[in-house]
Amino acid sequence: MIDINTIKVSLTFPPSKVTFPLMTKLVRVFELEVNILHADVRLNKTGKLIVELTGETHNIDDALKYIEEMGITCHIFNGTLTWDEEKCVHCGACTSVCPSRALTIGEPDYTLSFDKEKCLVCGLCVKACPLNVMCLAQRE
Image (cartoon, rainbow, N blue to C red):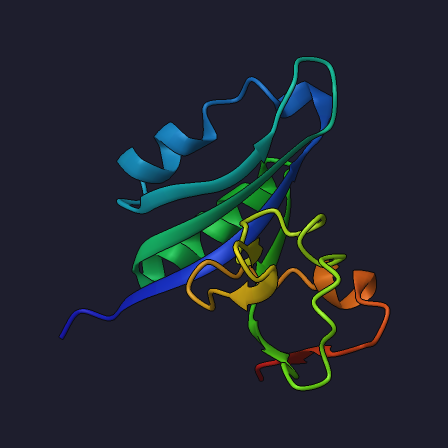
């Protein structure tokens, strides 16, 4: 039985590695499906990339080891975000920091909505919420 897994990962590239063809390696060498969720990459600057990696678990593990060996910092998002909708005042502070747009304010009633599938579990909304109605729980 093949063990397929999907993880969300934040990658931080030093300026010297921004032009390295990492996505090509992940697809060709490690046979991973790569979905880029957020990117901020510029020449001669530290680059940030948030990706979703899907593939056989051993290939993901090997790829993560390779990424770190290449001098690229890797952080796996492995928690769950909960939102106390009853205490929320729908101010929108969390929407301004959400890189995946999992948190949005919708018209016509301007209420907050949360799409769990889009959530990166990065925790930025937890820090931005003035009422502390967002909670990040790490999986073990």
